[in-house]
View 1 (spheres, rainbow, N blue to C red):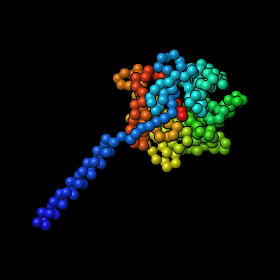
View 2: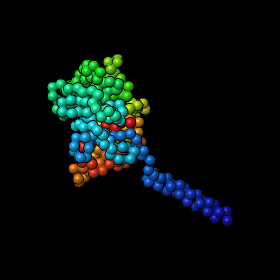
View 3: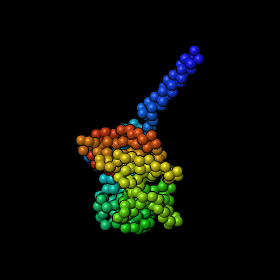
View 4: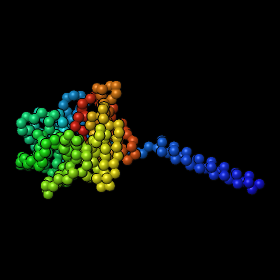
Length: 288
């Protein structure tokens, strides 16, 4: 009787362990973390009329603005934009419906050879002709912050406007640096290119070996989106550093884009927008 009883207990324990293991497997395979992005993504209108629209990151709704331009980024808030328009960079205030600042691009540079960003406070930065230029919107004074052959066009700033992140390319590939404008000190961070930095400066998204990587600048932990490349055309990290928006061409309909939200901590994606006209998500930016 004792042997039979022990055998029954043994079987019961095995069944319980199997149930626990199966429950854990089911949780890991089918449980989805809740993806709850907020803020706005700045896109061009699907109507091809040159206007800019806001994509609500919480609802996926497209909301019109009164701004027009080829490329744009947020200028410190969701109702103020830096806009490229012909040979000008303009700062447009959505509240007043007018420009509060304009700057003529020297040398009539085509869009393909320069990039601009909001540098905090009253400053705008431009990378062109291997120069990182900082422009004071109050005085129009232009300062060359950094000059380096192979300077990548995409760059980003810390929220306080003190540190700029950029990449330099050579025959071996890209390297990402940060530069403090107060101390004039440059520091190499790691290999990669095209940085996008969260507003709190805690995390950075960049390209390395044809993969999209997010790195925690405090803990140095990394997350990799291996599916990046090919049909993917742009990306931008969220202001809170929790998500990355990824623009990808829809297959087989290459005339349309999809905007995905990648929750890198859980390695899950959320489709925020589908069937958006191709090319209208160019120069993606994410604001509060």
